[in-house]
Length: 239
Image (cartoon, rainbow, N blue to C red):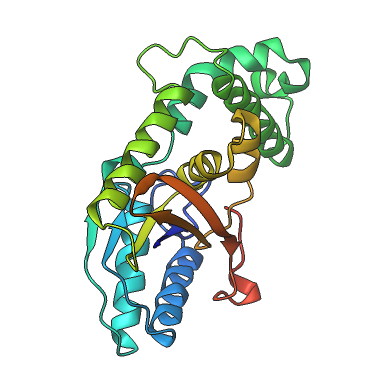
């Protein structure tokens, strides 16, 4: 059987003007991952990464850290299908109307929310939007639907598994929480909300492993989920 290791990117810059860059902690998470690969003498046929900066940088930093520890790994191949779902596009389009429709979020509109409350309310509003999105309750227009997101990730998984056969193949893909959740959906038959609830649990720089058979590369089985044994306690983060 082939082994597909999915890695979530290191911690991004939540709350900064440019979210799509690794924080200082995210950089250290990526390097710790690479050192663990070197210690294990990880042998892979290919390393893929999504197109987002946080995904590409995590892969590059991990490979560089492995090389620094004396273990050479292949350069990452960029695969567009591994990009995250359109979270910020959805937030920008739908958060204002959700804030009007849900009284508990009114502090976002009238300015009464404190800085601490505003962050909590934004989180609450964000997940209300995502829950509606994954249940096909939003008119997204040109923004990717949940069904489209699932189909895109499925296509990316199929490209990787088909390209590397089955028996003994080992592939690494650095991506984000959403595609990892979709991978579990496909392997375990999860419904939409279970998929979202799983991807909310995916830690930064964590490792999830799936297996596939050469005669049926589209059929995935889960071997491990959300492992962070390679990270010290001070580097454990969800975002």
